[in-house]
Amino acid sequence: MKNRSAFALSVLAFGYAFLYVPIAILIIYSFNDSRLVTVWSHFSTRWYGELFRNAQIGDALWLSLRVAAASATASVVLGTCAAFAMRRMRSLAARGAFEALVTTPLVPLLATQAAISSGSALSTKSFTAMVPKNITASGGPSFTR
Image (cartoon, rainbow, N blue to C red):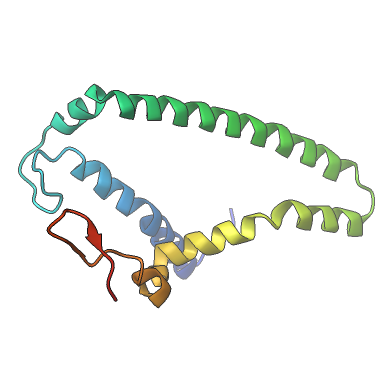
């Protein structure tokens, strides 16, 4: 096994913590009995019971699972076909061009995810102009700058 530096391991640990600690916090707070998200009352599965009693949520969950299964199946099939095609290519230039074609659609997704994760998307004026500032007496949002 190669000798890894402490810096590389700390960057790796920070990266995993950046990705998984928020998810763990959400999971922990999902068992909160309070109606307020920021106030911990005590451990309870009350909200999961409310969730499973709602028919619309159940229908949405079932649709999401079907779409996820179809998407994963299509991704595996297309990825396997692309891997076989890349393996059969003799020319290094053709393989590089095909690899660029396959990975290019990922760039906007990664850029968007990085912007959302870092919070920079929340600081732009175009985004903040669309966020409701307050709720009017009629119950609707008031969009003000």
